[in-house]
Length: 224
Length: 224
DNA sequence: GGGTGTGAAAGCCTTCACAGCA
DNA sequence: TGCTGTGAAGGCTTTCACACCC
Image (tube, rainbow over all chains, first blue to last red; front, side, top):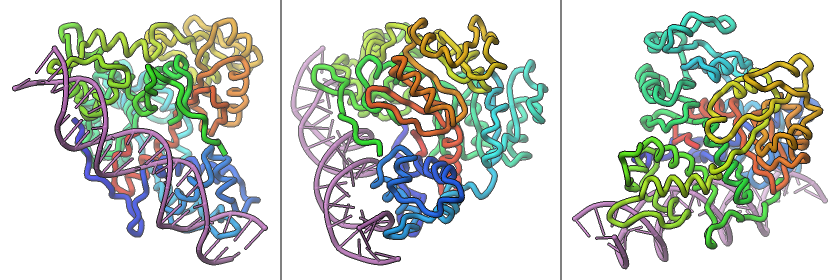
């Protein structure tokens, strides 16, 4: 089913930022960060080059954030970085819980890329007695029954689901009941969540199958 | 830059299958597999329910594969499965090389989900002497210098890049030079590849940032 | 001159709604 | 009657092209 949600909420002075644009903002931000401090301004052309899109798209996208460019010059790198970080909510931390500490969950727990970017892994949870109590870095794996407490204690904002597929929906339901409104799902299954919850998914098997489709039929971007 | 590719190749009797449809086929296939053998037919309504989309979309998507439904009845599950598997290239194996055996690469190497679904991990490659020579399952990590030989020997079809960002473009270039035409990129960087190469990416930091955007602004699907 | 900001056009994708067949 | 297959409509997204400002 999955009925059409009542659309549009994210606004700024009346203009909603399109989903497609939101998905590119992190790429632009990364490109800006790579420029370094000896580059005071960038043109849409340069940003486009390093983000792998075209210049018109960059200008449109940035115009949704507001008009931070200067005609004839380009965009002030530092200023644009600051606005982008603010738009992406990167002025604060968003504590993460990883549920399901198998191969993938453990790798995510050890992966440094989260913490230093504003998404500290604040808790690990698993249902198996073999795993509960183990430590990863300075975190002890807690039991799935305590999920609600964990979410409250650690002020969890984002739930990462790395359980087997059959457990994923129940975990999502518990996360949501505990107040989590953002979920990243690695389990190979479709999750149903209420409209006020943001859901993103990463499905490795699906990615492989998309690739082998194009391997057979000849590529057409295949890009996200 | 990234100029518009000459579009459209994947055809079937003249009708190209849209990218958006291709990305959903794996989900439909998974839904079909979950139905089990005591369900001979499904309606678009049922398939839609379990795939998390709406029924009109299912019908349109399936119509691109050809007309395998029966009016008044629905779709023959087994027949549809077979056609879908064929379309997705799942009637053969596509050997995979994982390049970069850090946290994530190692987790992917241990992850069982690939091999049993037609994407056997046939080789592991890394640039660090500390890692080369280690074994994961029955695979020994080989040195990055041997990438071209590895690709040839193992008939690699898909390259998975799990290196640090700075190494990723060079790895992609080598994979492509060695004949690989499908790449799944986990490195947090934009890759440039020629149009005949299919590229998909998984970027955890980007996913988190998209989620925190919607956490701040109120969700609007956020879905892929 | 150089490069942004943005209406307008074009292209995809989704949804509707219903003809048509089992 | 029930459900598929599909033109047509509608909505997003991308791209164009140029007015406008530094």
